[in-house]
Image (tube, rainbow, N blue to C red; front, side, top):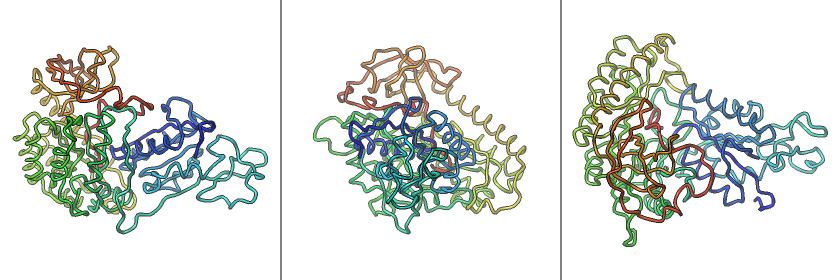
Length: 513
């Protein structure tokens, strides 16, 4: 454990889904408790931690770039790589020059313990052969010193990448901070049992498992004590929450959160939001819970579609038809007319014909979707799709992606037109834009810019949306500010670096991640 005189600085880079953001927050809190100090990524740091994603080939490339960048920013720093890319390709990660420690998903929440294990490397000083005398040979817990230093051995990255057991427990530690954010992202579920043909996530994250309801309620209480006004419930397969523990459904969990006992005090968590959720998990009970909650649950639904062609969905091993998906999206749009309803779509899945792609275009045109995330198919070793023939040529994939993104933009323009002049409830973030205006997030994931003083930060307010800018941000007029539900000075953002802004969030994620 570090002492104040030995305090090391740590910078984090988080790539990928909201689940990674949650786990970064957990790692940050455990390091702070051990005496480390958090700094921004752009600041000098003794240790740089890259929490990776592997959902697409592009994600892998981004991760490799950020890992190399970490060493360029601080040649003397220790570089730690963790997350899904580290879990699925540890040897490839370890081969990247400058990497000191590789941790899998089950290992990363013991980051402080692993940092202590590689000792002198973390201090930024070479470990000499004499210092290593009498110690165990270099291995998973003790890398050798850097090459090129007199009297030292070549240093090899330490690896700790544990496989998932057949029936793993939900892993995670309680945390009450979420540094640099006004909203908190809470991991209540992880893992997946679906094994869609294109997806590596079940291998990277293991079997589906849920945080027990009592722990969710306790965690939300800790976040509320820190002043977080919005909590985003996240998971790899969020809608499967409770299936493994027998505690009910995601609707039951949401009901428990909405009715939790705050000892008679007002609940500062003024809004809950669901991250990406599989379409078949959005049933009548969940819709009824959201409807009864009013504006305490965000009118924002991200339902991975992947294709509008039934034949492609079958090859993908997706468990629904296009008509079944459409029925769910249509009911959501009818119940919640101003809701944001988004979808992931994969273009160029093996064997996708022009006729099948045309089916997807027609489906998206007809469906009440308000935005799209379009992904170009890429092979993932270890998945069924990577073994399929009839790969779509890259130029064709590109052209189809361009066409589908253009359609998605037209759908989003239509959604924005419907919002002009409407009153919306926003959570005012602890940030301002370049012009000094406050930034607020609506329940349907619109970003609004308004004038006001800092006293509005971390509070809910009602605004009128005036006009959208080219960047998608709306100018807005403040209509009414809600009373402060707690002590904002003790709230989020009061300590720690800003790893990434929590405005302009990317709705949902690929494949439910």
